Amino acid sequence: MSAPLLSLQNLHAGYDDTLVLRGISLDVADGQVIAVLGPNGHGKTTLLRTISGLLRPREGTILFDDQAIERWRVDRIVAAGIVHIPQGDLVFPQMTVKENLYLGAYLADAHKRRDAQLEHVYRLFPRLKEREKQIASTLSGGERRMLAIGRGLMSRARLLMIDEPSLGLAPLITEEIYDNIRALKQEGYAILLVEENPERVADTADHIHLIDHGNVVWNGSAQELGANTSILTTYLGV
Amino acid sequence: MTAALIQTIYSGLVLGSIYALMAVGLTLIFGALRVLNLAHGALMMIGAYVSWLVVSWLGLPAWLGLPISFITLMLVGFLIYRLLIGPMIGKPNWDTNTFIATSGLALALESFALLVFGPRNQPQPFAVEGSFQVVGVTVSYQDLLIMAVAGIALILMERFLSHSRPGMAIRATAQQPDAAQLMGIRQDHIFLLVLGLSSGLAAMSGVLLSSIFFIAPTFGFHPMLKSFIICIFGGLGNIRGTLYAAFIVGITEALVSLFLGVRYALPVMFGLIIVVLIFRPAGLFGQREVVRL
Image (cartoon, one colour):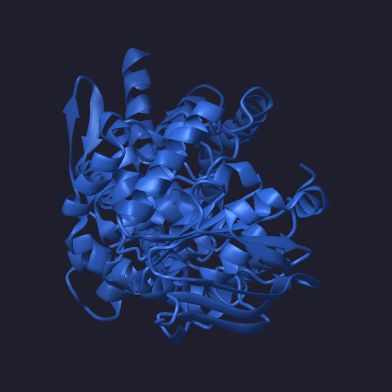
């Protein structure tokens, strides 16, 4: 088997004097969907922020495509193909949908092919094309999530990291977003998915990691997790 | 009476166009860096002196004063970011520290000007003579020059921010700094650019304002106070709102000066700002973020 696309080894990170990640190791292979589950405040978002370079790890390595990237600047990590779709979308509120998408193709490499890429995103999310000229702050929650994902796709992404794609959405809309995520998987993107609720990721993720207090406490397939009721009640309270 | 009124509104528009240049520079820094630059008035003053030096020391033609002053102050802005503001941003207490550092810089620049150029008022050479009469209003060529320069600069600025790649990156950084970084935008580059642009705009407004009055080491302070009022009126960080507010404040100032006297201009404006902040805390044109889930 070839080396995984992304490999985290013994990752430690945190803010000021609190350590949030305490030795996380996990792999994402090309074309795989890996889910990271865990209760709120146990380091899921911190994990993604550390991989994308917004936060420096204190210890451990991040290998992407066999290169150690844990000391790289954010823009270099983006250019390498890691795209972080942040929690709560963080779209640019006073800009139009199209401007938001164009900013996704900000880096020189992506800028050259931005119109082709825009077509591609519009095919995936026809709703965004309809709303092209609308100001992002006036979109509905579901549309904003689509915009955040579409904006991420505008760069030359190889790995998508999506932080709680179901957060704050009605069940039907969540379904729609997950259909989109499965479509992205079909297109061959590697995806690292962060969620709180195991049911959401059950039929999407190839492999699931459970995080508790900044450590991976369990990992396995969705079926294995579903069968393991003691794990579910202990860590996720379902 | 009507002639006096028209004349007053007209001078309000001239003042407003200078205030707009100055306040847009301030609000640009606040929008992108969340730093209140208290050296903005001092940069304006230095800009005015640079234009004066170009003519009186270097003997170059007067019209070169404006572009040379703009470029020089842009470089000064880069230096201020690299040496002063940049090293503080993101460190603990950076907001208080930059506040103190920029007011210290203002004092240092004013003392520097006093030492080198002396306390005497100097005339601004970037000026044209002459005037004509229209419907009872005296229009000077200098006023037209001021409005043309300010208008062109503001339109170019608007174009730059709305359509160019670096301009969009500035707006993205102002609206959502984390997401902007995740697009691959280098925050330090954007901050550097914003400091340069803002200082360049301060220089332009300094040259234009001193062409109506005069140049002196502390002449930037009162205009800076008015610019703060304008920025708060328009919603700090909101460029379009700042533009409208600049003209409202310019005309209000001219009207108050006509009916009550010049010394009431600032008190009336501070009174207005209190009223505005009571009823619209985000400024007259400030938007509260619309959030729908």
